[in-house]
Each structure stands twice: as structure tokens, then as C-alpha cells.
Image 1 (cartoon, each protein chain N blue to C red):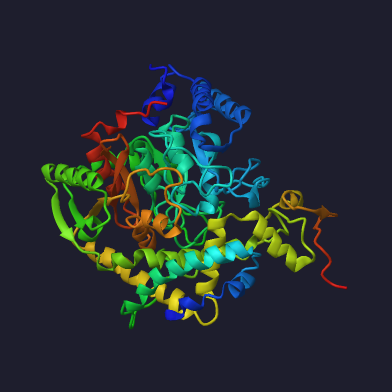
Image 2: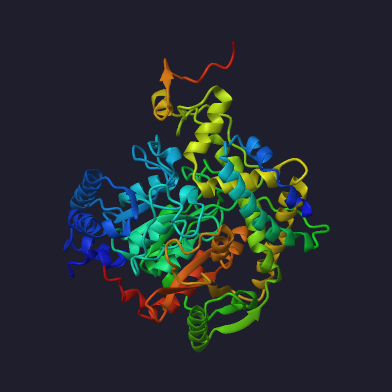
Length: 96
Length: 487
């Protein structure tokens, strides 16, 4: 995992849709470099033949009956929308 | 009865309410007055709603008068960490992102507490999106430790722990992803329980790392924690990882389970970096169990040294995915400085999130990104299996494990500026989350300078009754819980 040196913060911030200031980029690159350096010791663990654990709950394939249930009323669902009109969320124009 | 209702246990107060020597209105007024008296110094709450709390208390008294009281929590003021939804109340996750958000519905635990008759009092401060170990990452300012106001209460559920220690609530709910209930409980000298993953529904909990998050109680006594746990536990269709299991009467079970137990001491948890006063206090707790007739056995959890790294890969990966929903569109902060829709995402997130949240989103996005997924995320999930297997192997020999909860007592606000130094606060608690086990903090003394010390007891999956009984055996033989901070 010696790749941590190439943590390309611009690329990752773009993937995360997060605008960072030049100061944030410099600070995070240094701090996360330290953290990634620490994380590199995972490389020394022998995981041959080990199954990954996604979560520790002993439940698998949970099914729900296919029945219509009442959801949130529109007014409540839109209550926290930054901008709304006619039961819709208003966003900047996305098509010309 | 003492005028200081706010320092009593739920068990004591429930008896007074039942005996009608106390009303919920009187109790709630006392808690409200106490909050007003100390909150300026502690800052445990993000918001309170006094008329709402008093209305709930009046309803509780009316139920009781009509002979319809609902059990030991009816009329008891309980606080909720500000990541748990209460319909019609603010829900901020201590973030600018959700500064104006109002919950459209109740979390399952909220509905259950309401059904039990509890008086829901206030939204408790925490690290932003529950990311941190000191409550300094709150967008609304840090919470102060009631035992020493210049120090942190721990985190991320620092407001829950501090409010309880300061007498501003009689119990509280927190959430624990890597120690966020147990560590602040240790630093504030109260009981804090993280249940087995899957025992308590996460529906209505703001997601941080979904495979690790679990809601649990803070309480003055183990018995109080058992009462609150009994009220919130149980299968919920709306959380697909919640487990179908019978919920025992935890309080009644406490009386039936008297030990002795086989207790394991994981040697890796007493290594370098442990504060000597904490080490000595936990050793004394172990000596107590030995005197009680318990078999004490040294065990090894060989992958302990990889817990921190495994956690910070998995937790940040899940966080980066969970927090992708905050895009400024349907709810939450929306930037006024964006040039188009894509820029709206970038700017809203930049303006809405604090530094630690941004750091974790970046780290999580990185470990999931193309070319790094196998090396970091998949590998961490495999190491997680080894960590869980360590615990399960130890539990073939012992009933529970005893460790320190935190390697250090409460530290000064502002003392740990380096993220990695702060991450090390969780070294004894995160293994429990990775393995999905229940863990409890039990107060076990004070440092020479008067700061609380906690021991962590780790139990087997879905065997909270046993875990609580082990904890109570120690608690009842010591009087740490009678000591309160002077504010």
C-alpha cells in the first residue's frame, strides 16, 4: 500500500463532490498522509483465504412483503427542502 | 425526598412517581431548572423545548392519575443525542449542514421511548455527524466536562454523557460507532452501554457507518441502563440489520444472575499507552471480581493492533457513502454561491461540513476509489473477520472480558489538535464495534486530580443480561455512583 504517497487530493475531492480550499488541501494531504501511513500496517496481515465481514449481524437476505404502505406525506417530505414549488423541489436548471 | 431529584436514579424516581410522592411535572421542572442553572457552563444541549417537555410530563401525570402508568420510564426526563430523530424537533447532527432541519418522523427508539411514557428533553450535542472523540467537532461549540469544565466530555456522544453527569437529564441515548457511548461515559463517570449490533433499531438514526452504528443508553446505574435498554431494544422491519430475538426483562434478569463468571483479561489492552492510574483502577476492579469467586483468565486478542486501522478504513468508507446524500437538493444546507447544479453539490458540501467530516469523506472516498478498493477496503473487511474471530475464540473460554474503556482520562479542550492523536482515544472500544459485540462502561474510580475512570466489560452477542449482571456486581459493591460533580 505504498500508494498512499499518491493520494491525489484533487481527484478524490472531485469524486466526493467536495470543494476544498488550497489551505484545506494542504492540511488534509499532510494529515491523511499520516493516517494512511498508519493504515499501511494492514498490509502485514495474512488474509489468505479469509472471507470479508460486511457487518456482524447474523441476518441475511431480508425480504419484505410486497405490499403498498403509506410513506411520508408530500408536505412532510418537502418540509426541509431548501426551495420548493407545486410539490416539487426546485433546483438550478439542468437542461438547456 | 432530596430536592436534588436530578441526581437520583430512575429506579428511585420511578418508585417516588409510583408512590405519588413526586409528579412528573415536579421532576421535569427540577430538571429544567437544573439545566438552566448549569447549561451556560456545560453546553450539553443543542436545543431544548421546555413547553413540549412540560406537556409530556403533564400527560404522564394524567396517565398515572387514571391508573394507566406505563412502567418505570413513565414521566422520566430523558435526553437524546442530536442524531436521533424526534418528529417536529430539530435534528442537526451538530452540523451546519442540518442547522435548520426539522425531523419529519420519529426514530424507532424515539417512538419506543414515547410509548414507555418517557419525557423527551432536549437534543444533545455531539461531534459533527458523530465523528470524533471529544465533542469538539460540533459546529455549535464544544461541550464541557462537568468534572472539570476545562476538559472534554469525550465523544462523540459527549453531550449525552455530560448532561447526565451534570444532572440535566436522568438518562440519555447516544450512538456508538467506535466507542462514542462508552468513552464519554468513562470520561464523565456514568454507565454507558453499546448493545450488540442488531439489537436496537437504527431507523431514524443519522447514519455515520452503518455496519458499526448502534444506539444505546447512558444511565446513572446499571439497573437504569437495563430499564432503558429494555424499552428501546427489539426487531424493527424498518432496519434490515435488526435481529429477530426475544427481548428479556433485563431488569428482572439482573436479579437472577449472580455469577461467579469466567472473566478474560485481554493482555493487548494493558500495553503501552495506558495511563497508569487507569491501569491501576481497572486492575483493582479485576481483583474485586477475583475476590467474588470469578475465574480470572488472561486471554489474547492477537489482531488488536490492527483494530484502529481497520476501523478507519471501514468507518470512513461507509461515511463517505452515507454522507453523499447531503447535496443541498432535498434538505440540508444549500449554497447561494453556486454557478450550476454540479457546483451546487460542491459548494453546499464545502459550506455545510466541518473539517473532520471533510477529512473522513476524503479518506473514505479514497479507500473506495478505483485501484485502491482491494488494497484498503476489502483487506480491512477481511482483517475485520480476524478481529471478530479473536473475540469469538476468547468467548469459548470466558463469559466476558474486562479492559480499560479509555487509555486516558478527560483531556483539555484543544489539547489534541492532530487527528491521529484523537483517533487513538478509541483503541480499546473500536474492536467491539468491528466484532458487533455489546460493551459497557462502568465507573471504577477517579484519578488523583478527580477525573472519572471507567472499566469496559465486553459481552457475547445478544447476551446483554449477563453483561449487565457482571457490571452490576461491581457497581453494587462500590460507591462511585454516589459522587457527583460540583457545578
